[in-house]
Length: 254
Image (cartoon, rainbow, N blue to C red; front, top):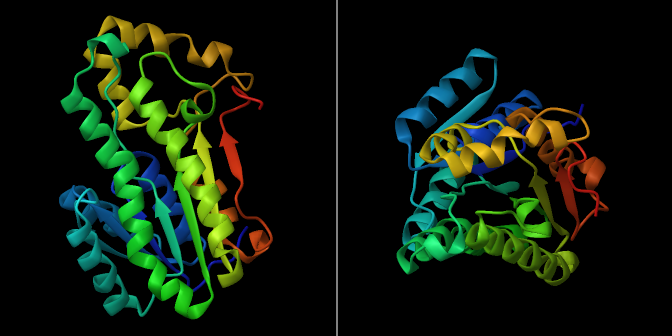
């Protein structure tokens, strides 16, 4: 297991799904976790669950698409815990549709949450991390950003952008001893996926055969992603930066 005792982590979108899995695992490894999410009531429940297991966490309500709110959220975490050692850019959203059925309003929403939100959060933590010559930034992209995914054209684009942005940040921040890496989940059992399945027969068909084509014969769990993040956040990964790790049961091998 990876030692994270007394490390301070922000997990965006940490209230449910993959974000909850990441938050629970980081807390299990000893980190103090700030769950930054629009869903305050769900974030509070995740905090309660972490504390029941002996961990430490707080919930901070924030809209990551708004830089002013993010620039308020980070000092709130610093006031509670003193600093930010780990930033996990997990918050994301999608609506599965063929591209010809999408609209510019939908493009803007997906780009704002998935990509602009990541930019905002990285921007807000960098000054402190750079001043301390220390930090771990882990962004949750997607294998859709590496190889594409039917019905997720704009989403795939934003996740590809996160990968490229993270590689550039890894280069720019290496001298400051800040590691920047990406975790790319494959199909994972989350509330968002369940909601997407209910939206159309197209979506149901896409997901129906997933477990059959994944070599390990199952969809991922939020905890699978959480352990990958815990590794990259740990000192054991101090010499790893600018890398992209797929957690997909072998669905993609590139």
